[in-house]
Each structure stands twice: as structure tokens, then as C-alpha cells.
Amino acid sequence: MTRDAPVLAVDVGGTKFAVGMVDADGEVYRAARAPTPPTAGSAELWRTLSELVDHIREGERIAGVGIGCGGPMTWPRGEVSPLNLAGWRDFPLRAELTAKFPGAPVRIHNDAICVAIAEHWRGAGRGSANMLGMVVSTGVGGGLILGGKVIDGGTGNAGHIGHVIVEPEGVACGCGGRGCLEAVARGPALAAWALDQGWRPTAPEMPDDAYREYGSATARRLAADAIAGDEIALSAMARAGHALGLAIASASHLCDLDVVTIGGGVSQAGHVLFGPLDVTLREHARMDFARRVRVVPAALGQDAGLVGAAALVLAGDRYWSPGEAG
Image (cartoon, rainbow, N blue to C red; front, side):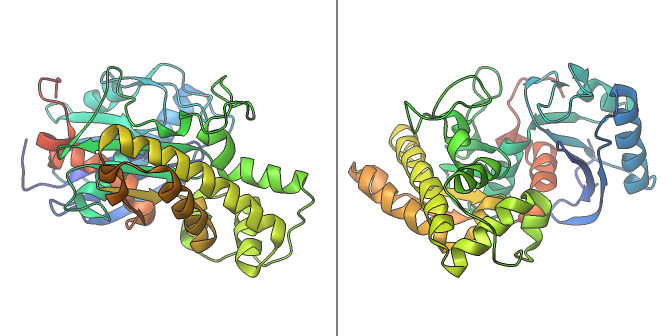
């Protein structure tokens, strides 16, 4: 592996592919995004991604390939079945990119874990040895860094805080459970709850790039109305903040965290979300060691997935498990 060469980073989402060239300092200096064809089959999806990779690479020498992809997947083999990408089921993404770049290390992880890695390496969690990185958007995901290294778990799914139970008798979750954090706090669930309470959007959409990248239009309007003082919208954001505070308090007691970073479209709501979150966190994080945890907005925006994927190669001693192939 050539350490002074950049890494080709790939971020696979349910609505878009993103590919970028990332230098040794974690800077994305060239990138492009392409929508994923909504009804595309396996071959068409791979062709779309492969063409985007070729376009961004421009024949440049690379140190390796890092991939962040929505789950589930078999890890570390990288056979992916993203919930929001129906055309890929057990698709051998890592193997395909390995064949495309023979001799280069190709490494893959869950996209939320890659975002957590990015925030630890170059973002709001930099300097912390023990952190949880979260994405709160159309879903809720996370990744754990403990002792300065990413925690994979037995199947590569450690840190999946979206399925911590925050309402034992709560609403059904897409995972098949009930009362999960994701079922309460993800953007579409927030908007649906507010609509059920009688909310009708009034404020203009917020122009923030992170919303355009991650959030649904209805969630944008909900956040804007909450900031403008709409009572139902405020209640929806307070409900999400309460659920997040409960989950983070539990995680802090379990993992002895220094900091939690929160990114994704819903997090852009600002104080109407973070205020109730902090109140609940302080009510429930009662052990002395858990009280020191800080919850901060993520810093890297839409590039976080690419930066974290690149770190699997550029900083593999911390973010890629020793002994794994590649």
C-alpha cells in the first residue's frame, strides 16, 4: 500500500452513491454524487457506481479503497443488503471493488460507523478516546470508539444505538421490535407523529445543506416550524430529544463515554432538539462518571461518510481490525 497516495472512498446510501478522493490528512479534494436508480437491479446499480468511481479516480494512483455502506451486511466480507437499496441483496461489493483494483486494500464498514470514525479522526470527537458517533436522519445509527479504536462487535454492528429501547410499550419499529430509538426519533417518524397531533407545516423550508442531503422535506418543515415556535412541532422535537437523551444516558453508563457527536438532517434542528436532549440526559445520567459526557453536533457534514471510509485505509491501525484480510 502506498501511504502517500490518496484513498478512493465510497459511500453507499439508499438514495445516492458518493465517491471521493481523500488525501492523507482526511481532506476530500474531489468528489461526486449520483442518485441511485430507484428500481434498478443489481447490475445497473453496480454499473452506476463503477462509472462514478472511474470518473472520480481519473486514473490516479491510490493507496486503497474504503467503503461505507448501509446494512445489513456480512462483515468483513462485505456482501451487502442495504435496507433502502432493494436491488442489492447479498451483493459482493467488497469483492467487486477488489477485482476492480487488484493489489489495493479494499475495506468496508457500516455507513454509520464510518461517520463515527470520521468525527473521531477529523471532526467533533477528535482528541477523545471514548466516543459515540450518531446519525439521526431517515434512520438512527451509530458507531463506538473505545480506547481510541473502533469497536466492531461480533458481526460488525456494535454501536447500533438506533435499536436501544426507549419506550418499552412504544410504536413498532422496522426491525420488528417495539419502542426503539429509531422508531421515535428518525425524521419520518417525527413528522408522522406531529401530523397525527394536528400539525400542518407553516414555516418555509430551512436552506441548510445538511437537510437537503439527509433529511426528508417534511422533517425540514417540522424543524423550521419548531424553531418558529409552533407548539406541536416543538413537542415533536422534545419527544425526539427525550428519546435521544435516554439512549445516550444508557450508552454513557455502559461505555464510559467522553463525548457523543450527533449528525444527520434531524440534528440540524439545533436547540429545539438538543435542549430537551440535554435535560433528559442530565436527569438520567446519574453516576458520577456518566455526568461528564458531552453531546455536540457533528462537524463534517455530508463529507463525513467519505472521510470515515477513507480512514479504514489511512488510519487502519485504529479503525480496521488487526488480522482481517486487506
